[in-house]
Length: 271
Image 1 (tube, rainbow, N blue to C red):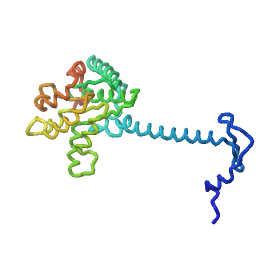
Image 2 (image 1 turned 60 degrees about the horizontal axis):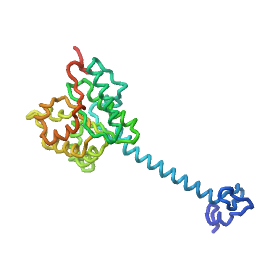
Image 3 (image 1 turned 45 degrees about the vertical axis):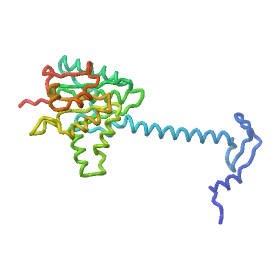
Image 4 (image 1 turned 90 degrees about the horizontal axis):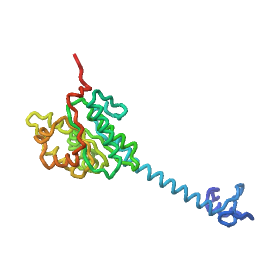
């Protein structure tokens, strides 16, 4: 059977030595029929460099997928209009909102340092911009951190709904174990609207044991979490057990952003 022209052994048989020398490696150049002379050692170096670039590109791809891509890919929103919120799109109405915007920007700058260890608490009535500013911090860190970080925004009420749905679907990616692991290891996490999962209950304002166990499993692994809630400290104490609250309140002194009625409800409608 005739040997194919692409057979490497056939190519090796056709290699011809020349009378030229590589100025870099001082070895004799060779040539293939109809091709320019080349240095075998230079060729090996180029192949090795290309393989290294390919490996580095692959590493960068997976590092990005595990870090900066997580905010868009794995975040859980219950309000799709919130996606894309940034400091630039926040329109403060009144002195309180402007002061909170400035403080949120300072906290975002602090979170750029992966060694920074503290939680942040946004509190106040609905519609003031707590979630918008919390996501703005995440977006700023995600886009500007010198060391790529994994950032996640998660609506607590929607998280619990998806975990409960996973009880009927064992192959769901929203199992309790998967979510606790994912949220527990994120470099910076927003738990949005904490307490809302209890406000929908008719019998009791106390959070269910299941919800508290999930939140404890997440927060017990963390020391860089941003929490938004419509509740005050007394209401939080009535809903959650002290051990869970202690995890929520890690390092929040000096890192509490509070909205009062001085800031108008951005979603109010008059009729």
